Image (tube, rainbow, N blue to C red; front, side, top):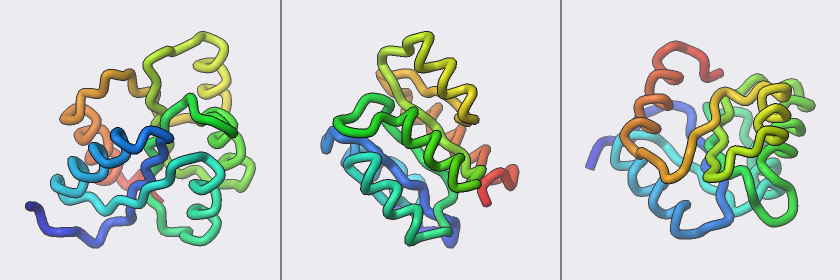
Length: 130
């Protein structure tokens, strides 16, 4: 298992506990620090309490507040944190909303974990994570 780094944690948000466990295990093994939330409301609370989150990886469709609404709220807080939205159903109106809210990238499901980890690693190493 890779050693934990001192990097800012990645907040992973998904209502599917299987996906949360998979991403937590995979990204932790790759050396990332991970914080998980099972919905957008919990994710927003984590962000308010922890200004050190380096990036967000979130599902689009969740009960309650969807990922696009969460991105809008994050940007409304004045945060430019990189946000990656995962979806298996990239609807044009949702994609347009996400782009207008400043989402970093839309990641299509089924996930290619190695490609995803490279995106997160690239973001971290190009000082885009604040």
